[in-house]
Length: 169
Image 1 (cartoon, one colour):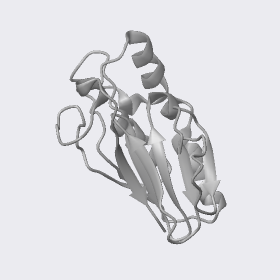
Image 2: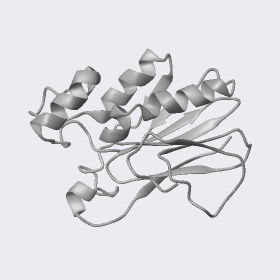
Image 3: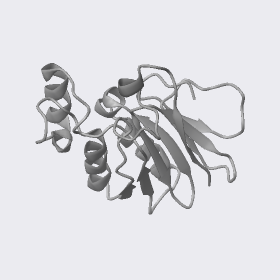
Image 4: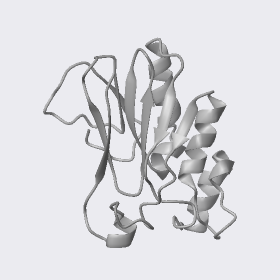
């Protein structure tokens, strides 16, 4: 998908070489792989018996409801027993933001607040909070892209590159 830190979710029925402009893809088509590309943002993969989703979760997408919107679409397609995986992303100790950004995010997602650094956001913990509120079992890898040189981090390297999260039904 062509990701732009939005809240756009697209339902995918068939393979296409055209990248839909979205930050989440959902499919009910068995064997159709969905991919999310990330640097320091969260690669969120959602799975159920009826559909799967690949979600790009950054600060802006999270504040605009990308996780809830994706879950709403999945549940509308009959998904139950959804399970979530949170892949490598920047951790709360490393994601320093302006005081204004910190206030904006932690007001709506208090779980994103950190106690280790002033004005740092823990987006993985915030995403886990959203998922728990929805009753979604979650497994977070707990790997920080900035601290672990095996993963790409734009904040660390200041160059373009991505890792991918891939899921299929």
